[in-house]
Length: 282
Ligand code: MF3
Ligand code: CO
Ligand code: CO
Image 1 (spheres, rainbow, N blue to C red):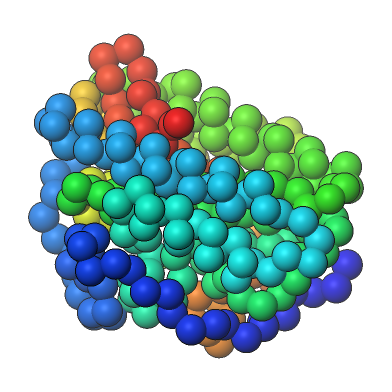
Image 2 (cartoon, rainbow, N blue to C red):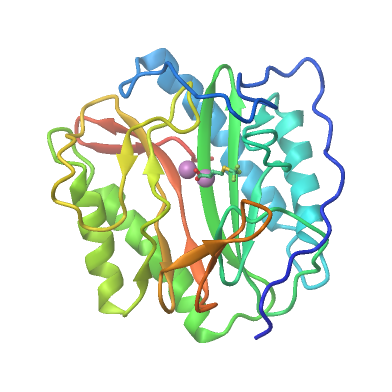
């Protein structure tokens, strides 16, 4: 398998003036603030709508995946879909990120910038979309194969989704948040997968990334307790080899040092009395 190389990035796509932007756009040093770990019902309803658009946007983009299609083309489709649905693509202008989604191919762990690289048969691609609508964000990611995927990549893709789902199923008010990482790490271990540690899940609300930290590995010292109305993402990244990573000169693209492939799934959820409600759902 050839290592992923950087390709040219096209000009920034415009967003219609009527669509409200989050406050950090084009302010690379802006520190997000405000927002609470726990939301009221009106905020949850708004996040459900932002999450719905974010989820459907991934499916729109994924429908176009094929050998020869560029990740830039996927980004255009997703950008258009989000704007058509009255949302702002949260990543566009976030700390200088230049596109409306992240497209992370093969050994790219996350934060891949859509560019003019044509997808190849057998590529493993993560599409991560966040939408800002009615003042709140919804954030999700899915992994896909381009054409025929090899068995090891297929297994990694399915088991990473399963790891996320097992963690989501353990969400309950009163439980420590560290149960999430314990479940994901223990499941990943069965298959010898690497668990990425440098990129984590996060609280999300009016703020894209709040200070609430969701680790995907076991960290018993993390004593945060889940509460009803709490909103956060669970977004495990599992690798076929070692989890250690570095960032490209573009300051965004995160790749495994050993070039092993990575899968990621993410959902935004709210803690309900009897478990998690997924907010990034159709
Ligand atoms: N959506 C990513 C997450 O899951 C964050 C992307 S930030 C970007 O938190 F700037 F890289 F797009
Ligand atoms: Co996220
Ligand atoms: Co995301």
